[in-house]
Structure formats: C-alpha cells, structure tokens
Amino acid sequence: MAVCALLAAFAVTAAGVAWWVRRRWLVVSIAGDSMRPTLRPGDRVVARRTTLAGIRRGDVVVVRTPAGWSATPPRGLLVKRAVALPGDPVPSDVAVQPAGGGRRVPPGRLVLFGDNPPASRDSRHIGYFTATDLLGVVVGPRRYGRRGPT
Image (cartoon, rainbow, N blue to C red; front, side, top):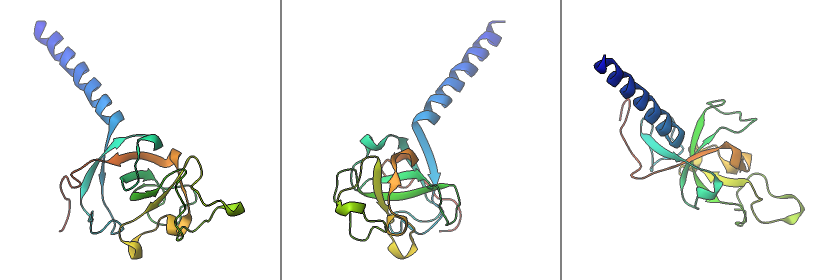
C-alpha cells in the first residue's frame, strides 16, 4: 500500500513539474532558412516564455504567425530577431510605415527581421508584429540539437 501511495505522489509531482515547465519554456524546431547563419533547418532552440517587456533589441524571439499570414506555415510558429521595440525608430525597410508621419514603433508592436533577408518573410513584408503574438525569447546557447540532414 505504501508503494502505491509513493508512486501516486511521484506521478502527481511529475505531472506538476511537467505543467510548470511547459508554462515557462518552449522547444521549437527550425524549419526554414530565414535565420541562417544563426539557426539552420533542423536546429532546435529553447525559448523562455515572456511578454514584450522581457524582450530587448537584438533578441531572437518566437512568435505565432500573425493573422492574415499568407506564407507557409499558415498558422505555426516563427523565429525572428527583434530589431525595434515600442518607442524605437521605425526602420526604413519596414513594409507598413506609420500613418501621420510618426517615426516610432507604436505601443504593443514590434519589428522582427530574419537574419537571412532573401529567405525571410518578416516586418520588411508585412509590417509590425503584435505583442499578443509573442511567445518567448530564445535562450543561449542557440542550438540544442538537430533533426534531419545537416
């Protein structure tokens, strides 16, 4: 009987730990070339879940594909680099420039670029990403293993 109680307690504890880890961390497999040379297809990265306040310019972040996304994957996850945050100057190559002559990234928005511009669909094409699409920031070192061919 004591063994059953011990096993049940272990199972409940393990489930609690798994739930806690999943709420705070995310493992993402890189599928495309948009972040080359930093990340390659097949690389896996770990991201710490955070809000816009936890992001710094230059961080590699994980976001949900935005509404109206027309590229593949249609509603998956994207890994990009944060190049401008709310209040920062808007880079000149962002697709959607602010109306009314404002030259700053608006609150709740961020500008994300891939490290490999010819292979990346990012703020250069679709404009701002929203803070609600942000899932987390990739923690270093950047690579945690590969799947598939090198």
